[in-house]
Image 1 (cartoon, rainbow, N blue to C red):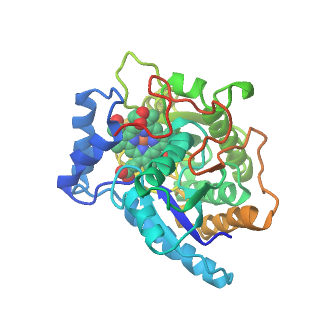
Image 2: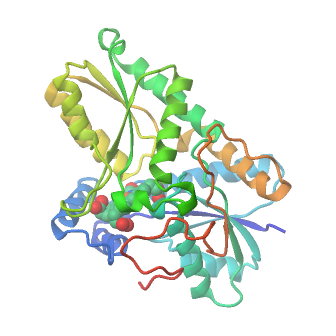
Image 3: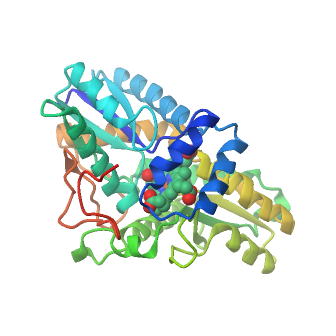
Length: 353
Ligand SMILES: CC1=C(CCC(=O)O)c2cc3nc(cc4[nH]c(cc5[nH]c(cc1n2)c(C)c5CCC(=O)O)c(CCC(=O)O)c4C)C(CCC(=O)O)=C3C
Ligand SMILES: [Fe+2]
């Protein structure tokens, strides 16, 4: 019997002195160059050292609790993070103290791949190990990148962003989808080998296709953002800012940027898009409109309720895409054999940290 829901996310600092320790948690053993880390510290300090991500997740949880209550579901919701407080280890300990035995886990990443999926399984395993033998069972809900409610929330935000552009540029505006870049090798290893790899970029491409179609666009681009590895390591490209430069050189009058890879307006959105990408557009004198993320849309929490019903009542999985759909796992076990293996990292459910 399911007796709780854990919302599991990335985490972010909420005061300046926490920025460095947070970044050390994120990048431990990841080979991120110190210059990149110094630059990212500055991005956070630009916002007073406060990442919006925890507040956004608390807001999602408040609305989720209201939806659950309205549906007559008595399911307490807990909040834990991979990289910053509330840390998932402490949250799972509190769940144990509260007598939780069997919880579902909603991760704030819609995707397959190491960072977006497998690492959340690892977080679950690490938290249960920290709590010990009486830890609650934790079952991760599936990936949801092509759920009709998510796709329609994004499609509406694309239409709203287009409507915000002046009439003169709207018709010629280019729709550009963006998602977090990952190392090429991580993408090649995303998904079970039998599925041919690249599950992350394939799912992002499918989500972009579905959103574009529902928003009424038959032509668009898909680009990447926020790369952090050393320059000699290939990551998914092109970068969104380089792409805006290229569009301006082709005399495109405006861009509509849709952050399809993210569910809320956290730092990768408010810095990398609303600051850097927007500045690039302004430098070229072209229009810029950023589509809203779906986390604040009522469809987002309704989708979570549907994902819960899939597990509890065996309701059919509503989805629009055809790429492999994975991500379900019990107690941190991977969803499929050798799925989304970490490249250049120890293969273990409980990485040293
Ligand atoms: C696929 C993916 C998602 C989407 C799926 C999901 O949502 O989970 C995502 C989300 C996020 N990434 C975030 C922040 C960061 N990501 C970093 C670094 C990295 N991300 C990676 C991938 C992803 N990241 C990778 C392969 C790295 C390299 C290090 C490593 O191999 O792990 C770094 C290190 C410094 C730097 O940027 O270089 C930071 C600070 C925040 C929070 C923002 C806030 O505070 O509001 C969020 C939601
Ligand atoms: Fe990231």
